[in-house]
Length: 198
Image (cartoon, rainbow, N blue to C red; front, top):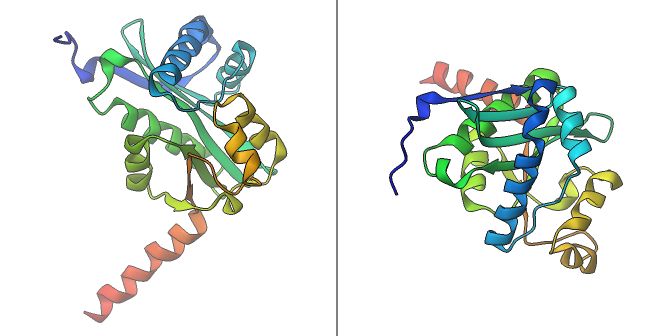
């Protein structure tokens, strides 16, 4: 099936309350993707997604007025950690780099609003792991992520929650990935001195 759209026609922006009309479509898209993948995606209520938009903590992708993709950010452990969650791209818009654009925008929003926070995510998707790696995330054990009970409670709606419980929250099917701005700053300051030596 040929797609009649250009990626240039898709806008990726921070959502505000004027985008609340897309909430049902977003939740339906997330639910359908979870069924197809057979892996866990934590469910969120319409009120939760609406709140993210009102707070300016959501990213939405649109092709004209048509919903194309979504992601949101949330803080944990007194804003020491920021999670980029709920990444979804409508099937017809997949395979064109849109997920990467959405993740990039969510990453930029996280860095702008919480410059000192560690940014993390949990994923079972290889494509998301690749995007995260390109943004500077590293795979980590769950013990390096937030210990905020409210975050982990969000995993209860996932089909794999029993694995997380059985392993004392040490393992699951998801891979934990973390971007540490302090480590990144240290790394970016090192190459300068190495260049001077050459």
